[in-house]
Length: 285
Image (tube, rainbow, N blue to C red):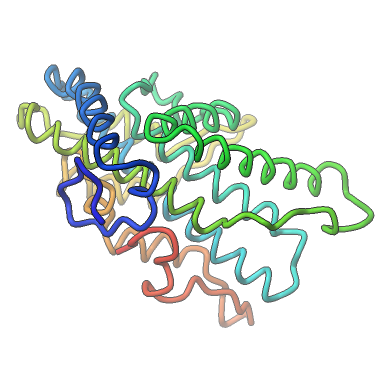
């Protein structure tokens, strides 16, 4: 079933179950109006910011997928200390991915990239509550549990190991809902840009590429050549925001996932697998 308001051929699995067609249509109209406030006065700067925000959102989906694959490997290997980390940060990645697609959140010279855990959780679930009141409350409680379990292992070093950790939640379903919410937002954004924006504004600026590709943390500077390369491709080929499934390029997903593979020559068995194994939460190309 394809949600009302979504016109692209993305095979939603969970998102449309949040509410009935009449309500999702009403919410879509509200969201479209929010995007229109931006796109009717679209500038080169806004185009560049939002193109980079869509790129960030695709990275959050890929990151969540990589962490979910790592979780599966850890479970099969008996590496239980890592499981709470993988579960929580896969979820946090997608909460941030939603935030990056929200018309209500400003770029703020790139500071949006550094949004805190608490803000990402609250903002993303406030947005989800537009579609349904009950499900976000339940899912937010699950995220709180995942966060608590990660902190328990990291900070309290429980002598009983993971004996007190819960597992009654459906992590894949949670991640799928979050990824598809970001996808749905990006579809409405794309439609609004196509309808309202002046094509002369379609460019990606160096300052925004740099804000994503080079970060400073605790006085250390990390520069990512792959981000620079991928955003260079975006600047040449895409030039504007599209929905996440269309924006995400096979070369991007293959390089991102492959960057976390073990070195077979050194006897490191972990592998993200083939593209057919990256579909658990999103239709990764």
